[in-house]
Image 1: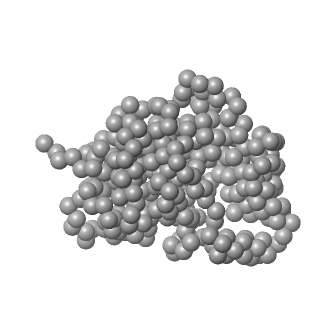
Image 2: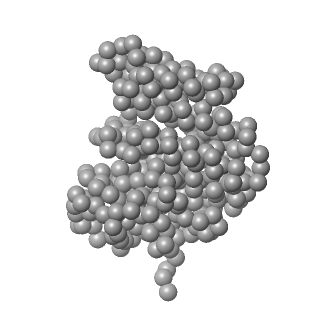
Image 3: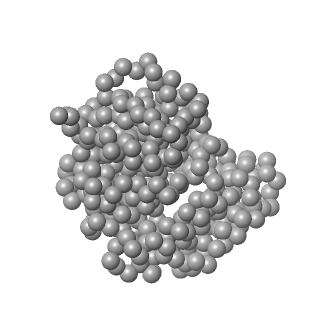
Length: 320
């Protein structure tokens, strides 16, 4: 009979290149040691698993499948997971050493909590802090709040009880980019007040050119479809929160368009964020920041715009 471990860490792997070994090392460096680490190779062709071939840690388990996408890889990992708590880590992200211990402590102290998430800092290809702002939620968060503003941010910040996953089901494999939001919303809809922030920066979320999340047009298509499914997640009225949710995501898409130098779409999306939920958008400083960035992207030469962004990020780092 398989021995149950407290935590199962699932890492979907596809052509991870140089990022996989640091990700794995960040798990093995955890102060909380009662875990299994499951790597699911989703049809990699770059030989990235060779970077961890020298590791002889008995907690590591590796499985391979034909390429089917990250949610399918995660589902393959879930089917093999023996832990009572499941944590997720993208192959290019990193955890700080106290990550699992902090989540385990929160879940042990709060039996009413099904899902926890910590704060994330954004890093570049070399692991350097980008100085980009990120939400630092404190306390519990409701289903409605989570739909309005997906403060979880990324899959690598999440841990969830296995028995909650047994109730809501696995990842929806039809989503290639927004599968984490879909899962979190389904868990949050189980019962009131069952999602809680772990108030520490414990996840390092890597930004690089190969990310699917930077393909904002594809993300937007999936997001708009997902938003139409929200009324089916919970037996409650969601009509009032959908415009706010859409407004917040349009701001996010505007930021991605800005990064890619698509000034026309960045400005259009930034302005539409205000029009979708005017009262809430006008009161949110983030919308003004992105609008200013979109105007700068449209008016400034690209080199000068990038210098302005770099200056702003430096100021943010020194302030935080």
